Length: 234
Image 1 (cartoon, rainbow, N blue to C red):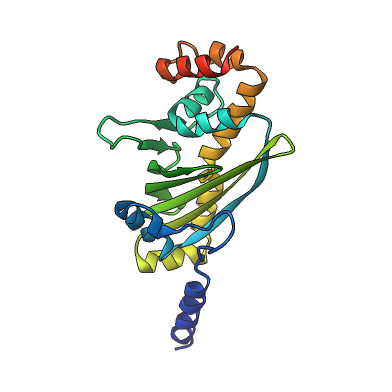
Image 2 (cartoon, rainbow, N blue to C red):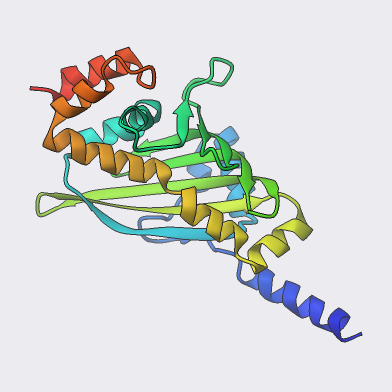
């Protein structure tokens, strides 16, 4: 009987610790300001979020316009790193997907379709849906990734926060209690931002290196590389 008496308490504590969307600060979002279809996507995560993980503030030795270009063309950003042998994951566009959507495969069981819901000055909001490998099993889930950034004293700084929801009430409780979702997010949840930061620093220091090492690679779209050349190579 004791385990049965303890179980409701455990579930109550787990529910009480659900991440709460802030109403002030850089991560505050007015859901009602989004289009109706995007509101539904946001609420599908925020109303019953399983976990929230935050990326510490990171200094990026680059320019804002480079960072924004790379966030806006994630297949190019990941392709540059793959061409250099620096990434084992893949980000690409599938012709069957809606415009603006990209697919992500970390080669270890996380498969996502992601899109930018809103691009504001100094803040981008991404939504993704797919499958997360939690080690013992894989589960369907959704995430909202909020990326914020600013320039202070001539230096670009960025932070990010990921809210995640896994499907199924019973499975959700187990995942949260054993922190499996948090672990999966910490390993791969910030890949988009980390990739943009890495390539942005490379581009600021030596854009010619990207052109040399990514040029002709099947990992990089030639049109994106040419746009990068036009905008950032002098």
